[in-house]
Length: 110
Ligand code: HEM
Image 1 (cartoon, rainbow, N blue to C red):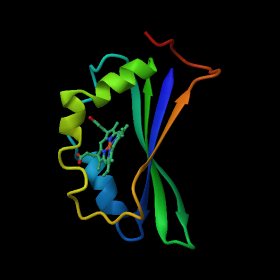
Image 2 (cartoon, rainbow, N blue to C red):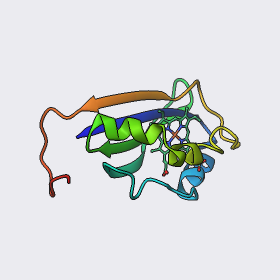
Image 3 (tube, protein in one colour):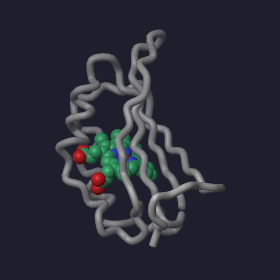
């Protein structure tokens, strides 16, 4: 499996607006080849710099499945409005990708 995280530093006061963008979005992930799971994760609040860390977290069958999604019409549609909201960020999102070394799963991937 291949895991992709995009980390967002959301400035203090923008957290609710950020969560609402994700909760109210029209998702295009279900049915994409190799798509397994999506979560939006909220991490800790950073007192020093005044932001809350969030991560969008997806699991794919293979890296190739993830890369195909990033080139798809569904990816373009999902990001048509990204960056147009009132959310204040600290810097740009940071993408991190991971290959699975070992894992324990309830159900095996297709
Ligand atoms: C290759 C890089 C990126 C990956 C892997 C990624 C991942 C994702 C995923 C999995 C979704 C949900 C799609 C769906 O449910 O159909 C999404 C939506 C979104 N992404 Fe990204 N993203 C990337 C680049 C960016 C960038 C550069 C931004 C900067 C603003 C961004 C901001 C957002 C926002 C705000 C949404 C919610 C869409 C909406 O407005 O309804 N993403 N992204």
